[in-house]
Image (cartoon, rainbow, N blue to C red; front, side):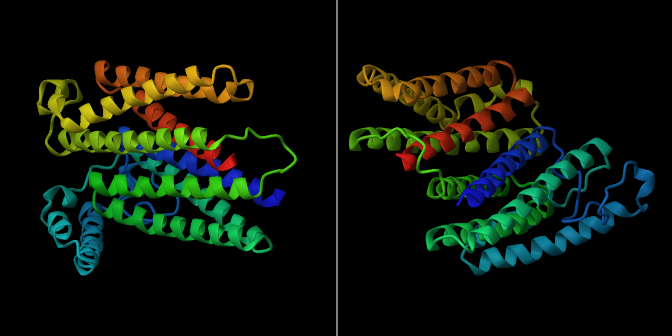
Length: 331
């Protein structure tokens, strides 16, 4: 069991690395640094200068992406998402080929390296889980399936020229993968180590906070989609966003109101169980989490959405959700 736990831990760390690398790719607008997948400009080791590419590289890779988008649109229409399929096919932004940029290309390439390593880690986890109990085998199998689906979806994201909702859908599956790895680690943890035992009321309290954090993440992702759409497709600058309809976006306000609710619930939990020493760590964690996100939210709002804050904000939210989920299943 120890080997399975270690494999799950390594896989989880690498998935977090993929998410961070993917966030860096997004804020640096490097997602199309490699216009094809899994290779980069048709090479396993990407080029460092445009001179290493054929003169018609834009036309070549655009045609390849168009064919992939056509296949994906047909699949969407087949499973009932005809409107989304039409939107993709009629979106002129999808067919824009960007100029070669070595920095963007290698940023995206590093992201893919982390993705490859996480794939190897999950595959190894599945192999060592074969000799574990049936629950762990099933969870490891689902982890492998999700990661395989993620690899395919990543190729579609690239082919679509990073349509915001597809990028978001891609990340949601990463969050689900993290939750599954949490379950595996809980099933294979050292039973001799002490753990904090929560009563039914405390578990429900954490469950409510977990749901609120997931909702806040969901609305935050929606806000990020609007930011990406307005800056990359509609042409607004980051500095001008707060002077547009974005400032009155209902999703933005809901995202903020949820954060207030989380803070109030965390304070109530802290006050109600302040005399219970075994809950000390959890109490301070729950107070610290919303404060971290609040500070980062202020930096984003009044600092014109700096890239570093966007990356840290997303990572912090995912770590918080992951830790609360771990607390819930561990107890």
